[in-house]
Image: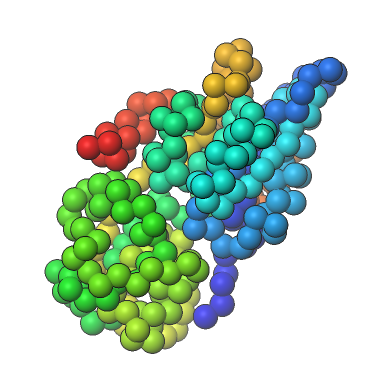
Amino acid sequence: MRQRFPLAAIAIGFVCIVADAPPLRAGTEDITILVVKEHGVGSPTLAQPYVDRFTALTAQQNGWAGARGQYLSSRSAVGPSVEALNPHYGMFSLAAFLALRETYRLEVIGRVASTLAGGAQYFVVSKAARDLEGCKGKTLGSDHIDDARFVERVVARRQFRLAEFEMLRNQRPLQSVHQVLNGEAECALIDDAQLSELRHVDAAGDVRVVWKSEPLPPMAVVAFPAAPAAERKGFQASLRDLCREASAQTACKEVGIQSLEAASESDYADVVSLYGE
């Protein structure tokens, strides 16, 4: 099965294209944007050129003296990057945001939904089982089980526990799909992007969805404490129109942005509560 995800999909979080930009200001430091996308396809090395391109455009259109972006594929790399780069903003996949929000005092200022990034909804799929109960006690393959708290409290809303399955812990996003197809796993826990890919595979005709989660909030645009209040407010106010300008439409389409808009803590309150229970 071919991996159909474009490389741009793993770099969704760093597109911050603000319309009607003022002229560049001299004499200020570069503003750092962290992109934390777990379970993406590809490597940070492949994603970084996208980060560089769009953070440069961000600086130009925001009137910043400059901006630098850093793509991270795991939450464990956030600490050293915060220490070294003192970021103002970030784009976090949901599980990483929930795990790190208190540690780094992350404030939600926006949200970005993509048809490519994945994580908006989760599914258990199987060829043999007819429902979730039929998967319990059997092998369940997934690359999403590194944060059991997130899976059990936010994704499953306590409808199941990982201990109820014989887990196959995977590293590659499409490995779990392969395991169901070849019979190595009875069931698989996948996200919406992986399910979309599965539907393009002829051999997957017998694979059915036996359980699905509630829809989840998309990747969070966040501000770090280092971002000045006025800068933060202006940046947040601009989010709604970012992909509407002619100069930004191509870039948004390239990275698969479905919607980009301002948001607040209340938009993530439900999942924050579930994760903290």
